[in-house]
Image 1: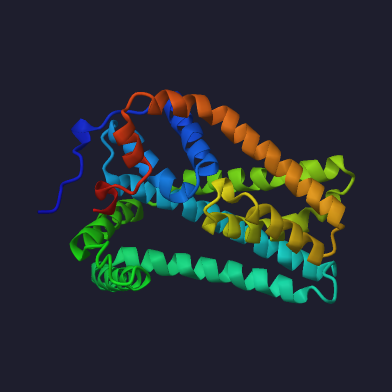
Image 2 (image 1 turned 180 degrees about the horizontal axis):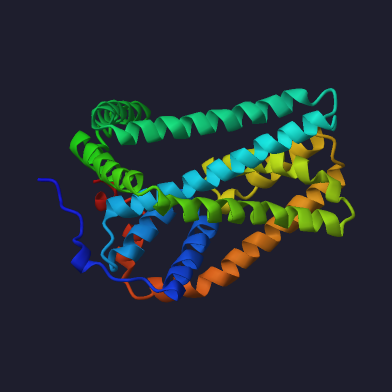
Length: 300
């Protein structure tokens, strides 16, 4: 039997301060703990459970957060690429990098559109759930040489996507609900990239902002798939590489990227660690481990 979502009467109102605190905690988890994307989902699902939020609702919010961030990031990247091409600031031997990052940005936006199309229709959800379950189980069985034959169950995967479908329909009926999150998502994303520009200006190289925007798009993608905390290593390396290919001096690129990343990561750790530690100290060791795994509820 499909579990019912929490009734509105069982939900609790989250104050602005509490929401900000949880946001600091989530940023800490995503940047300081390896595989932050997965850990972050497990953590925020547990954290908001006490407020009456169902796993499907939290997943929808979490996915929406990333979709808005990605959309803002890739949109800015495309504008930066157009600016570099129009102003003739792309080195003759660097157009391949511009087209590569541009194709990546367009591909990501198309993938987002496909995901939205899937979540919007129950028939597609059923088909995708089945194919995903078969593929993942086949892959796991292959890499473990048959020792582990099944990690996903079709019913649970399908139920999870159906929860997302219901939340998608809610947002679709009242599109105004998404206006503020999208606007703030774009503002936040721009201000995050602007941190690099502030460091660049302090070094007397404010003109490299378009190169920073293009490089950050690839850096954020590499950082998202790396298991290191906050994508450390790959994030910085890919950004510096792209900036150098686009004509930025190696010393300038390295200084701007490394100094900015240190500032961002330190700020994230300092602002979130205390709140995170206070929240996590209230549960036992066994439960702590479960928090950083995608729980059964998150898969339903």
